[in-house]
Length: 75
Image (cartoon, rainbow, N blue to C red):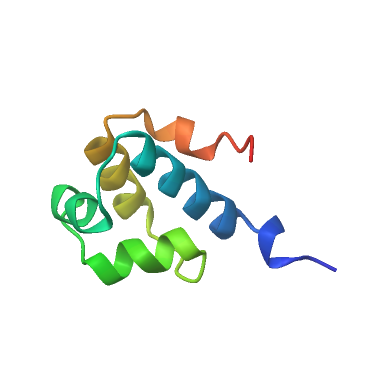
């Protein structure tokens, strides 16, 4: 049986949160830089909202990180 923490959506959200915190930016700032709503960033980081590829790309660009690195789950 899969735990929530085993899902790609959950792991991606945690990775985005880690990268955001490393850069010392708020959810609001990341949302503005990525062109999405703050509620969207919050939902993604909590693993309750599955983002589109376009949204993940925008978040990666806003975080100044290569897209594929958001999918390296060492957490």
